[in-house]
Length: 433
Image 1: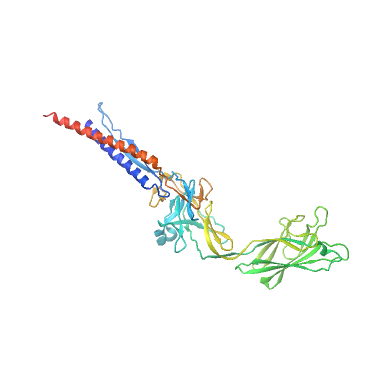
Image 2: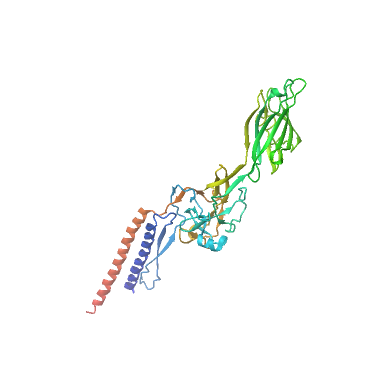
């Protein structure tokens, strides 16, 4: 019985070391595979029950575990949509074959890196057929709230290279100096005009025209102007009229003293702006704070539009897309404008090593991993999304070769045990002779 148990222990040692060698072989074979997580083999002794003082060898059993929480180093690439996770968390993806059949109901898988490029439909897909998933943004670039404990709401990230986009102008900031000499009693009272381009809701260029008319007093200086605004989109209709009074004190000379609305929205002293209604809707016009040097001023004898600050862009064509560290997918247009079109969350589970390993370096949450949660990249326990980057294999070649030598020696030793048991059994057989 004791000799037989020794033979069985030797056989279990051979099997266990063969399993360990298989894990080492897998690790070495994938040393160049992006995002590969190494497999570790662990040995556990089998301790049989003993009775009557006789000892029986139990042998050994090997178990393997994929170390999903073992991260490889990041390397830079020249593709903006090569993505990796710098820290904890994983990217949500789905198999392209499932997306084509099930659409948004395709099963969510997780990966730590991928080289995503657009396919014929503009979806970000890897060569192995993984589609990047994200939450779609609203037309204004904001991302609505989605449930975080389910993959409902995630959809394939789609980059439409022929997409057109334009942003309407909703705010104009005026930095204009009016000549102080024009409000003196000997002035001609000539008006000053200014035309500012803006873009309406469908991307058409329009103009907001300003006419500044000084108030000429009988004597001295009035320091007062009447500003009339007309909108080209409404056939030159007046959309605002304001009386501007400037200060002539020693410490605040040339700054706005008061703004009185005749037509249009009232002046807000807290923001230094008024609201006017152009053809496309309300527009904020910033005139400057009272007593401040920003915005409108009245100094010297020259009319000078110093700065015109406005939002809105003309219609442009998308030229590229990038993913920032917070997972927002930005579309860039040839007009220089950009807009958020998706947000890619990072998925985290309590026990990453408990996930089920699938093909193409993807993983599936399981009861052993715990429930998943979708975090904003860079928030909570998760790391950041790195664009222009790939995660290298977590395999350490030097460590694996060292383990291979140890495994080979252990295998040879177990083979020697079997050989020794065979010789002992042969001696036992020879007793009969």
